[in-house]
Amino acid sequence: MRRDERVPHGWQTNPSNPSKRRRSVALSMLGLATTVYLASFQLGVVSSVWDPLFGTASRTVLTSSVSYVLSVPVSAFGSLGFAAAAATATLEGPERWRTQPCVAILFGATALILGAGSVSLLLAQSVFVGAWSAPCLLAAAASLALVGTATDETLASLQYLRQVYDYRGSLWRAFWKGSHVRSRANESEG
Image 1 (tube, rainbow, N blue to C red):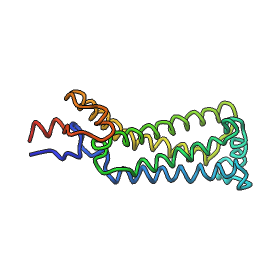
Image 2 (tube, rainbow, N blue to C red):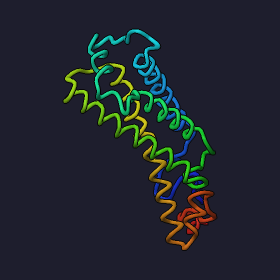
Image 3 (cartoon, one colour):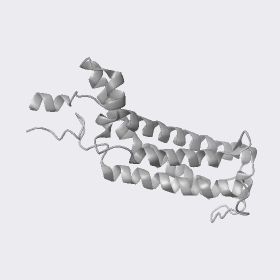
Image 4 (tube, rainbow, N blue to C red):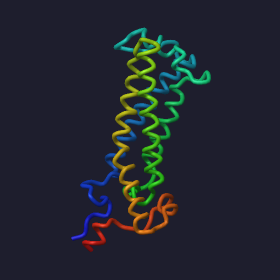
Protein backbone atom coordinates (compact mmCIF):
# COMPACT_ATOMS: atom_id res chain seq x y z
CA MET A 1 0.00 0.00 0.00
CA ARG A 2 1.32 3.44 -0.93
CA ARG A 3 1.66 6.13 1.68
CA ASP A 4 -0.22 9.38 1.33
CA GLU A 5 2.18 11.63 -0.62
CA ARG A 6 0.99 14.64 1.38
CA VAL A 7 2.80 13.15 4.39
CA PRO A 8 6.62 13.33 4.33
CA HIS A 9 8.66 10.17 4.76
CA GLY A 10 8.94 9.34 8.46
CA TRP A 11 6.09 11.65 9.48
CA GLN A 12 2.63 10.75 10.76
CA THR A 13 0.77 13.84 9.54
CA ASN A 14 0.89 16.40 6.77
CA PRO A 15 2.77 19.48 8.07
CA SER A 16 0.96 21.67 5.51
CA ASN A 17 -2.44 20.47 6.69
CA PRO A 18 -5.05 23.21 6.14
CA SER A 19 -6.26 23.03 9.76
CA LYS A 20 -2.72 23.68 11.03
CA ARG A 21 -2.39 26.58 8.67
CA ARG A 22 -5.74 28.02 9.81
CA ARG A 23 -4.32 28.06 13.34
CA SER A 24 -1.28 29.90 12.01
CA VAL A 25 -3.50 32.47 10.31
CA ALA A 26 -5.53 32.92 13.52
CA LEU A 27 -2.37 33.45 15.58
CA SER A 28 -1.04 35.88 12.98
CA MET A 29 -4.28 37.85 13.02
CA LEU A 30 -4.27 37.98 16.83
CA GLY A 31 -0.70 39.28 16.76
CA LEU A 32 -1.55 41.72 13.97
CA ALA A 33 -4.57 43.14 15.82
CA THR A 34 -2.55 43.51 19.01
CA THR A 35 0.44 45.18 17.37
CA VAL A 36 -1.75 47.53 15.32
CA TYR A 37 -3.44 48.57 18.59
CA LEU A 38 -0.05 49.14 20.23
CA ALA A 39 1.26 51.07 17.22
CA SER A 40 -1.91 53.19 17.24
CA PHE A 41 -1.10 54.28 20.78
CA GLN A 42 2.56 54.87 20.02
CA LEU A 43 1.71 56.95 16.95
CA GLY A 44 -0.86 59.02 18.88
CA VAL A 45 -3.94 57.68 17.09
CA VAL A 46 -5.39 56.54 20.43
CA SER A 47 -4.65 58.39 23.66
CA SER A 48 -4.38 55.47 26.07
CA VAL A 49 -3.69 51.77 26.08
CA TRP A 50 -5.89 49.32 27.97
CA ASP A 51 -4.00 46.87 30.16
CA PRO A 52 -6.03 44.75 32.59
CA LEU A 53 -2.94 43.24 34.25
CA PHE A 54 -0.30 45.94 34.59
CA GLY A 55 -2.33 49.15 34.32
CA THR A 56 -0.20 52.21 33.55
CA ALA A 57 2.95 50.09 33.22
CA SER A 58 1.98 49.55 29.58
CA ARG A 59 2.29 53.28 28.97
CA THR A 60 5.75 53.19 30.56
CA VAL A 61 6.81 50.31 28.32
CA LEU A 62 5.31 51.75 25.13
CA THR A 63 6.85 55.20 25.60
CA SER A 64 10.30 53.88 26.52
CA SER A 65 13.25 54.06 24.12
CA VAL A 66 13.23 50.24 23.98
CA SER A 67 9.93 50.39 22.08
CA TYR A 68 11.34 52.41 19.17
CA VAL A 69 13.88 51.71 16.44
CA LEU A 70 14.97 54.73 14.40
CA SER A 71 11.97 56.65 15.80
CA VAL A 72 9.56 54.00 14.50
CA PRO A 73 7.49 52.01 17.00
CA VAL A 74 8.65 48.40 17.21
CA SER A 75 4.98 47.41 17.23
CA ALA A 76 4.70 48.78 13.66
CA PHE A 77 7.44 46.37 12.59
CA GLY A 78 5.58 43.63 14.45
CA SER A 79 2.42 44.49 12.52
CA LEU A 80 4.30 44.07 9.24
CA GLY A 81 5.72 40.76 10.44
CA PHE A 82 2.35 39.38 11.53
CA ALA A 83 0.77 40.52 8.23
CA ALA A 84 3.56 38.73 6.33
CA ALA A 85 3.06 35.61 8.45
CA ALA A 86 -0.69 35.63 7.77
CA ALA A 87 -0.09 36.07 4.05
CA THR A 88 2.54 33.34 3.79
CA ALA A 89 0.41 30.97 5.89
CA THR A 90 -2.39 31.22 3.32
CA LEU A 91 -0.30 30.81 0.16
CA GLU A 92 -0.22 27.59 -1.86
CA GLY A 93 -1.87 24.23 -1.37
CA PRO A 94 -1.96 21.41 1.17
CA GLU A 95 1.35 19.94 -0.01
CA ARG A 96 3.38 23.13 -0.10
CA TRP A 97 6.16 21.61 2.02
CA ARG A 98 6.96 19.66 -1.19
CA THR A 99 5.38 21.66 -4.02
CA GLN A 100 6.50 25.15 -2.87
CA PRO A 101 9.25 24.78 -0.25
CA CYS A 102 10.19 28.45 -0.70
CA VAL A 103 6.80 29.55 0.69
CA ALA A 104 6.92 27.13 3.63
CA ILE A 105 10.48 28.19 4.48
CA LEU A 106 9.61 31.90 4.14
CA PHE A 107 6.68 31.35 6.52
CA GLY A 108 9.00 29.59 8.98
CA ALA A 109 11.62 32.34 8.73
CA THR A 110 8.98 35.03 9.30
CA ALA A 111 7.66 33.21 12.36
CA LEU A 112 11.18 32.71 13.71
CA ILE A 113 12.04 36.39 13.29
CA LEU A 114 8.81 37.39 15.06
CA GLY A 115 9.52 34.96 17.90
CA ALA A 116 13.12 36.10 18.34
CA GLY A 117 12.06 39.74 18.24
CA SER A 118 9.37 39.15 20.85
CA VAL A 119 11.73 37.40 23.23
CA SER A 120 14.28 40.20 22.78
CA LEU A 121 11.67 42.86 23.50
CA LEU A 122 10.37 41.04 26.58
CA LEU A 123 13.90 40.80 27.94
CA ALA A 124 14.50 44.48 27.20
CA GLN A 125 11.23 45.44 28.93
CA SER A 126 12.22 43.49 31.98
CA VAL A 127 15.86 44.60 32.19
CA PHE A 128 15.87 48.18 30.89
CA VAL A 129 12.33 49.41 31.56
CA GLY A 130 11.47 47.35 34.62
CA ALA A 131 7.82 47.15 33.60
CA TRP A 132 5.48 44.83 31.72
CA SER A 133 2.67 45.27 29.24
CA ALA A 134 -0.16 42.75 28.86
CA PRO A 135 -0.76 43.60 25.17
CA CYS A 136 2.98 43.16 24.52
CA LEU A 137 2.88 39.80 26.30
CA LEU A 138 -0.14 38.79 24.19
CA ALA A 139 1.69 39.67 20.97
CA ALA A 140 4.76 37.77 22.19
CA ALA A 141 2.65 34.72 23.06
CA ALA A 142 1.09 34.80 19.58
CA SER A 143 4.52 35.01 17.94
CA LEU A 144 5.97 32.16 20.00
CA ALA A 145 2.92 29.97 19.29
CA LEU A 146 3.36 30.85 15.62
CA VAL A 147 6.93 29.53 15.74
CA GLY A 148 5.48 26.26 17.01
CA THR A 149 2.99 26.00 14.16
CA ALA A 150 5.60 26.87 11.51
CA THR A 151 8.35 24.52 12.67
CA ASP A 152 6.96 21.23 11.31
CA GLU A 153 6.32 22.57 7.84
CA THR A 154 9.71 24.27 7.64
CA LEU A 155 11.52 21.12 8.78
CA ALA A 156 9.55 19.00 6.29
CA SER A 157 10.54 21.37 3.47
CA LEU A 158 14.20 21.24 4.50
CA GLN A 159 14.02 17.43 4.73
CA TYR A 160 12.47 17.35 1.26
CA LEU A 161 15.19 19.58 -0.18
CA ARG A 162 17.78 17.29 1.35
CA GLN A 163 16.06 14.38 -0.38
CA VAL A 164 16.19 16.23 -3.71
CA TYR A 165 19.90 16.86 -3.13
CA ASP A 166 20.50 13.18 -2.30
CA TYR A 167 18.76 12.18 -5.56
CA ARG A 168 20.91 14.70 -7.47
CA GLY A 169 17.90 16.83 -8.35
CA SER A 170 18.02 20.57 -8.89
CA LEU A 171 17.87 22.26 -5.48
CA TRP A 172 17.22 25.62 -7.13
CA ARG A 173 14.21 24.32 -9.04
CA ALA A 174 12.96 22.30 -6.07
CA PHE A 175 13.22 25.28 -3.72
CA TRP A 176 11.18 27.56 -5.99
CA LYS A 177 8.81 25.16 -7.74
CA GLY A 178 8.99 21.79 -6.02
CA SER A 179 10.34 18.73 -7.75
CA HIS A 180 9.36 15.42 -9.23
CA VAL A 181 11.27 13.62 -6.46
CA ARG A 182 8.74 11.76 -4.31
CA SER A 183 9.01 10.40 -0.81
CA ARG A 184 11.43 7.48 -0.46
CA ALA A 185 8.70 5.50 1.25
CA ASN A 186 6.39 5.91 -1.76
CA GLU A 187 9.08 4.83 -4.20
CA SER A 188 10.06 1.76 -2.21
CA GLU A 189 6.49 0.68 -1.44
CA GLY A 190 4.94 1.50 -4.80
